[in-house]
Image (cartoon, rainbow, N blue to C red):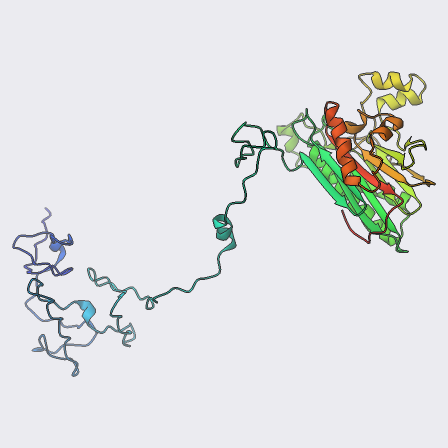
Length: 449
């Protein structure tokens, strides 16, 4: 049978010194539990709080080794009860017997209620500031200027990418991309019907061993019926661009460099199909990522193109009295029908099977056959490197020349925007990507995509 602890006969609260009445179990001022305070023993303690022995007969006020017992503070007024001695009034020692540092008169690290010491260093009046944690600083940084909706131009865009005014979903990073590099530029857009942009491009400049400039442009179109077409086009564009910008300064012939770049792009796309054997068991309907590719290398006197699939390159001279030309031949059902003499070009491309491709980059493609061709134009012009999202609306070379602005050689970015706008105005049924590369190459120094 348990018993309640006996209350000690106290006149003042040991925590706050508030006067107590007989029978109080809790302090009326601070709520201190008086039942845990033991009654004062009749005998004297054998061990002092500072670790030294008290001799029989030594009482309050008698010192130990000549050290007087500390005198309690005088009452602050007639209503203030007399102070009592607390354990914290004594000089303490550590486990080795050495004296602990004296307590600070203010900001004491000792809890008066419990007598438990927290050995902390003295608290300074001011705290030195540490260098901010960049992770925390980034959260506390001022908010950037709110983005306006691209549709209504009035509402702010929330964190989920939607307009708070009209609810329009905002473009993702790859939905619209623009880049300039030296004398050329490229633009890619998601179009008006696709839910994402599966095209990719890479442009850059390099210096040949003799110091002559060279411009490089790569455009890739992801095969929508394949798995991860956007990843395939991006991997191919990066691999081909890096390969060209590495090989050309070493003195590799541009046509050979283009061939090797397409092979490198093919390997990069094939690598995307490398996955655990169990992956296809969970997704049996997935096929290998795939894309098409077209590229151009422009030097001071040579123009080289390479391709696999149905993305194209066009030649448009600055002098529009000279004829333009299409520099590539599609790997497609329509092109095969025309090549075999079974259909005219107009009939073949009017067929619903026209855009079925017969060549592409990917692990499930037929034997890779990179196509390359080199030309030596006798006059200045621009090379238009594009996906079928553009040439669907300007298929013939003459139609493409009509759309290309006359100042394309000196304003390539503006011209690329105009060409993408032409496709969007025509319906934007597909992703649209185009690079505009002036010929001959303009000296700009070495660079990268």
